[in-house]
Image 1: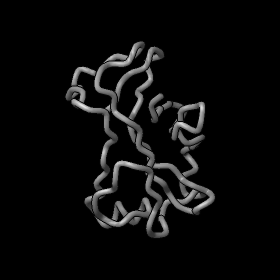
Image 2: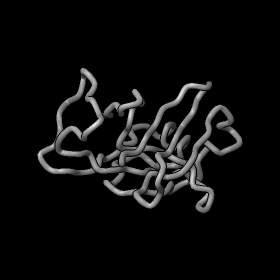
Image 3: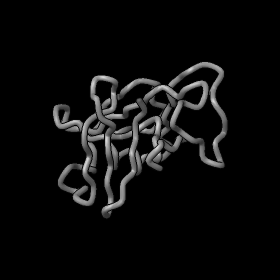
Length: 125
């Protein structure tokens, strides 16, 4: 799920980012609000807001996809989680992407993933 900010950019509640300190990918989740924040709109397929604010849980269903990212199959908790296996995806093999900053509440900017000149924004403030 995502919301759209005032600039028309999609804002997601999770991201998978490369952590150069751990030499692996990291799942970053942020709280889904209980109502529409000021300045945001919900897409037409929005499923609705939860009754209490919570973070999403990520499920890796396929060993091949999990290996690509550096995670084994299974559910990942509603907090940031580092890769548990060495990912096939490395900074060298993802040259079409630029990953910048972690939206963990400690960073003032949203993490940005750019592909082919277009932008997809993740994280929520």
